[in-house]
Image 1 (cartoon, rainbow, N blue to C red):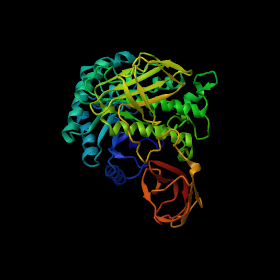
Image 2: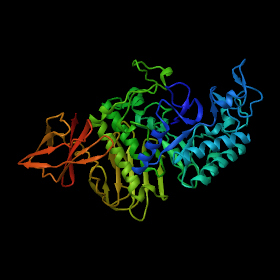
Image 3: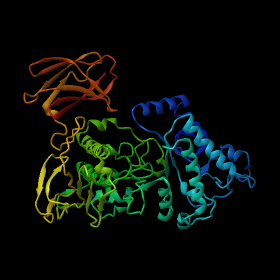
Image 4: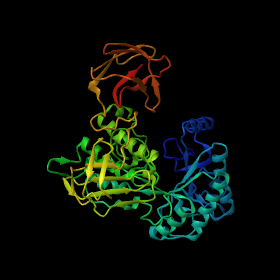
Length: 517
């Protein structure tokens, strides 16, 4: 989200005043550079949210030509409209047809690319970068606007002239004929699917097809779909309040609500194309977007800081959701099947969703039942033979592609035409997710530089043991084995915090939580 100087300290950054300055509340410019370098060293790109639709009153663009009596830009201001040209404006509306504005925007982009090494940009409210006056008519604002298209193509071309690999992302939400032109030009576009996926997770009929770039008629997978964002209510919050129920199955129960998000996740990540995951969505964050520091709910607290709950990592159900989501991302990023252009997203049934992925290496079928009752349906496997279910490790032999199957409410499955070995750092198996009863570690907490004893069941033959930090960093441990007891030394340099202590045994992993002091 925007990190340049904005008014006040508590903000999402969409009230910018000095777009070339790093906001003092977040730290220094050198610390920002160090953060970006650290991300790059880990193979991660960093994309900056930029706000060029508007500025706030402290901005030099406002103060240089300012009508103090009416507290708005003066009539002579070349950069800013006296009154906004569209209904979604906040602050003071920028004139993007002015050559000076174009120079100012490009100077911003140049700095963030060349000095800070950002890997791309997400343009906030890109639909507002126009002088077409739509007044209060949101429909008119969304219609195809040739002048706006030309402005955005000019900015994109400039970015690519500095860095051909830079991501150019638009928060646009205009009519599809305009978005199609921008997508086919090489830009990526925000795809808000919060309402649709949350409705499905709650157990209500919902059309998810707009998460599919092909349905929109685009040539390339340039749709960045998301189930949650900073602007949307959290999925679990809504499920817990408004979810459906039937015959003793209740989506408003906490454990069930998380499993409903699992089902949504299986379909969401199976649809080819890039995705956006909002922070803590992988752990079922349920605090309202309007949660206030005093615990009340009020939309005046929308941009206030929300509780940071690292203790969620100690909850088995939340970690299950995290591992399911991580596993879908693992499939998406490691197997070309899940990025194929030869696929079908079957959304004809508003409750039963299916994705069929075809690739020379391997085919896949993802199925999910979003009903709150048991469903019997034809999965429509593309051909007979053996299909392997990724999460359970089970397989089925399909002899009749018209044979029906029965899914429990909220059940989902990911089938592949070849077996896939689950990654060792993801305990994704339904039954083996967290085998806490198989090992015990003491003392807990343990001091850095101290010794911890790990007692394990006789059926386990440990082959390796490691600590996993919250950020996924792995720390190998060494020690002595005495019968069913391992005595391990915790390195002195290990920082304090909560870790996963993982014992590898063949193709299984057994995890216990420990605290290092």
